[in-house]
Length: 356
Image (cartoon, rainbow, N blue to C red; front, side, top):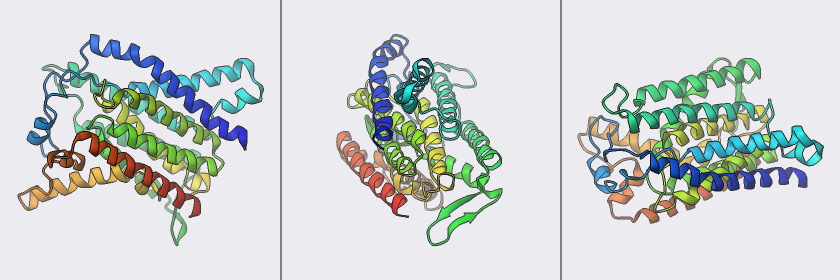
């Protein structure tokens, strides 16, 4: 039991330290190459300029680099490689326990994290350097959704065909067999969680929210005896905290798509892995643990629907965290209250998963 707990804490701490150490090098590269948007402003989901958002953030978007999410996935990758190498070189009980790479628990979420993050990195680069090319402004929302759907399809097929997962757990009903419909559900949930990735809009916001969510799933996986998966989630949380150290106001860089795409896909996969595959209830509590992402997506849907059918907006600006800014909340107040809500949701979701 003690060595299992250590397996969470030590790799997470290592990931944090690695993140802190690599950030000065990354920061120097990002600033020296001016890896930021060359023009402030944002296009809303309806294709029009987001006037209020642009006014609120006109001084922040230009001059602050994107691609800060590299800290998260690179720290996670380097930690995994380091602990795997130490185990291969020296062996022994300690290094064997600390090595969290395993085919049945962490290969899929780690591969998905890296794949999504690399695609996000390409999107960030195109948005910064696209110029007048076809890809100016980065990959369109449609293209990004296709990428996310493709990655989730491949993961869903692995779950369904290789691991034999075809059911989910629901309250009252227990295990519900879905058959091939499991694949469709997997894709829908992944896209839904990814759509909440636009929460990366205020200094420090996304880092605190995602650290809470991955910590919750580290706890769920740990108590389901999925120790390698728990360690993986703890490592991501540690990497996010390293990012957050430099992302609190004034942010040294933004997480951007190279962080958000990989993290949202990995979070969804972890939720499915802690469900029927792990003999638990990780999927049904995902909307609770990821409530800030859910509310972010819902606020966009409500805004777009209202503008289309009622001809007026519900929020001054969507997503809703920018609405709070628009009505006069200081950015730090929005961020800290989101952190509080995220921690409460994480604790509640973890509790429901364990008593369910």
